[in-house]
Length: 331
Image (cartoon, rainbow, N blue to C red; front, side, top):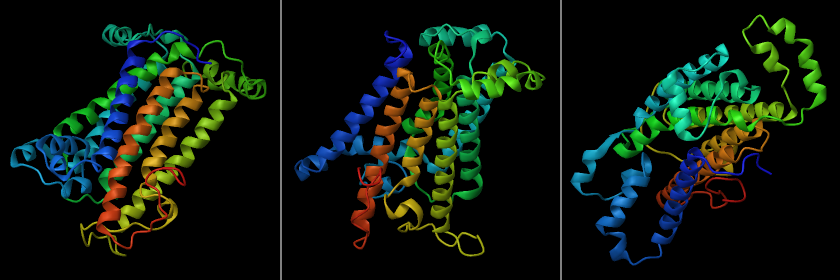
């Protein structure tokens, strides 16, 4: 049972995003059943141009005017840089346990939340910290680990990606009022209350640690496992283009093997879903807003995984047919 019955603007926003990517996923799946004439139409090509990026975009036959809106896929690191800065600032403001600037309070009010810095709970602090860690890791992976080809993405995708982590950071603040009044897991709460006096040397941290509950522990564990899994995927993908010396030898696309790649085409997308699921668990699983974010991530990553899976099957005749696109054994 969710802790708030009415929909806020932030709930509507994530509902619309989730529904939009669900529609895009369904339309793409149905498009292969349509006549070839329609598949070559400008409307269909425009649609495919919007939902594809990187290697899945390279085989799309587009008019030259559509290429005007292309930006390099390697600009992915911009998303995570913005997130590190923005969510790092929000984390700092929350950690200070003081009132927010008026402009930030106004943004939260527009989204439907009356945030009060004095009421911030451990769930909010943890999710803010973990999303910052996630963004920092992905930023370093983009800059140091990943080997990008000359693939591109649509300018609309780029702008969406830049704004995504800004909106998500504000969403986390709006979740703060949904975590009050929950039954605590007494064992862990009492353990951490013993350390609250020691931890109080950090402003506001002592009282916050006393809120530790079982769902915080499970969420952190799931986040850690999913992060390690995703990092391993990034290393395996980068290894397809580098030699033993670590130097780039090719920018060509190859079939990945090892780890969860033996089960799904895009395990890094599956890991992304697990990461956002861990955030919802950290909020005790009672936040409708957080589950709407997870639903959006599910449809977003499912669409990207499906496009990648279809490319592998089409391009490589010996591609393992037992692999799923996104979720092992299911999708």
